[in-house]
Every structure is written in C-alpha cells, then in structure tokens.
Length: 217
Picture 1 (cartoon, rainbow, N blue to C red):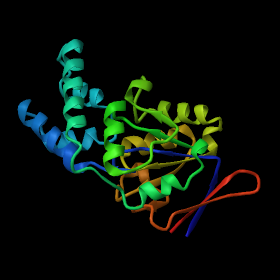
Picture 2: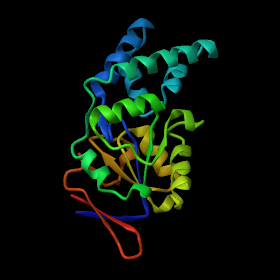
Picture 3: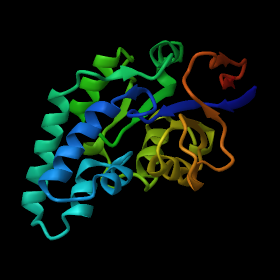
Picture 4: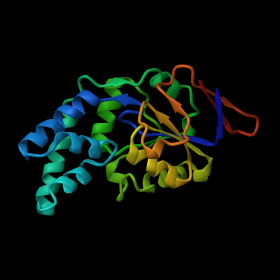
C-alpha cells in the first residue's frame, strides 16, 4: 500500500482515465501509410502529445497553414470515431468520489475530442479542464500542469498527477507534483514512481485540515 497526501488531483485523459488505444492507433496508422512514415516510430512519439506537435515532428517541411489544416482534420476524425473508447477500470467511480473543486483534467486532445471520449467512457467531466486549445506549449513541458494547479488554487507541490505516457510523466514531474503512473509504461520518466493498473482499490479520504489522503493498492 502507498499513501500520498495532497490538496488536489489532476489527471491526464488518454491511457489514464480512458482507453482509446484502438481508435488512436487506427487513425495514426492511416496517417503514417498516407505519408509513408514509420508507424511504430510515429505512435511512440504521438502518445501523450498534442496532435499538432506530432504533425510538425513528422512533416516538418509542411507549411504551417497546411499543418494546421491537417491537424484539424485528424482531430475531427478522432472526435467522430469515438466508438471503442472505454474507461480505465474504476476511473469513473474514482473521479466521482473526489471533491469536485479539487480535480482537474490536463489533456493533449482538443476540447471536443476530450468531451467525446470522456462521455463515451462514462467518466465524469471535471470542473477544471485544460485541453490543447488552452495550453500553448504541450507536454512534455509542464505548462498544463502548472496552470491546472493555479486554477485549483494550490501549489504544484500539493498536487498528485495520474499519468501514463512518457511525455506526460515528464511534464508532471517537471511541474513539481507528485506523480502516479497508470498502466505499464516503464521508461526513465516512470523510474521510482508509484504505479496502478486502474482505480479499483484506490481510495481517497478528506483529512481534518482539508487535505486529501490517497491510498494506492
């Protein structure tokens, strides 16, 4: 058992609260085939990052206007292809158990896509949500997590972040938050961090001073 004390909890979305692997891999595989790219390399980079950052990384010579249009098209396809998105085990019930003014979502997806996936998976929509439109510099930069802490009115060091991908784990660690790995990522960004496979058995208790005590199985 691992116990963490914090003032707020912040979640990534894909791979952390919802499992959209099948949808994401299908869309990026089609993109890789269309542009003659290595799909394994592309998927490894894309996970946890904003769509536009991936487009720029693999099509660096594309004019910015065309890259933006391509990004918008990919996001529209993702939002329309939500079928097959499911919750990470126990995610919906766990988020619902938390004080609503202590929870935020920081996702590299845009707002429409985030709403679509959270609804499809049945995970409650947090009070504070930061999507790609709200964060100029995406993960692995810590900007999204720093802004979430500010909006929740807490110091970043008083936050616990749940994340699953290297870019997000790097961002969360750089923000000064405590970090919990969701899933099986075992790269350097996950070294030394507590880990859960889902939220069944994860509990939260509000202490007398208002702090949150998280217990991880």
